[in-house]
Amino acid sequence: MNLGSLQHLVRSVRTLAEDCQVVVLGSASLLASFPELGDGSEPLTATYDADLCPQPFDETTALLIHQSLGESGAFHLRHGYHVDVLRDSIFETLPAGWRERLVPVPDCDGVTALDPHDLAATKLLVGRPKDIALVRHLATTGRVSRITVEQRLDSIAKADRLIITSKRSLDEAFDSAP
Image: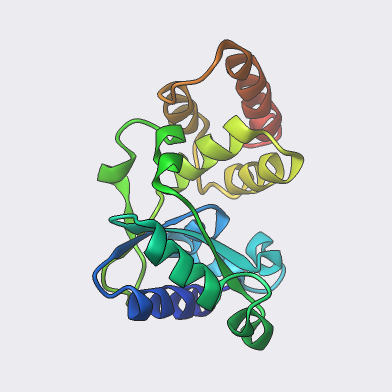
């Protein structure tokens, strides 16, 4: 996915749900801060979805967006990318203060995206190999700092078992970073 594709998706969402603001979560949120991550051989060129949460959230709007712009629908088949609608309960898994750090998506009124450090922290909390690899790329290219990511990770409420695994993910992502 590139910035143009993300902008197309979120503008389409705003057309369907003009009374909503949109928060971009997930890897595609990085395009608001680093549009170049969607070009050439950068990691987001292999991303074909954008995780979005309309605000205020309601099930009817989520269903409308999913049916119109979701995976395997006509929009997806035509354009090659789609929306994954997330419920606002996802916000409970984000670092403290994340709303104050939202980044505007360029040229898209009413649309914001996660700050890259907040995204990195949530990716490390999940700890899948592809998430660790993405954070490692962000770290080695100087786009996120270990100290800030670690602070954001520490601010997420989590079970004890996740404290250990997220610390392990942090070390793995940053072990080869400058």
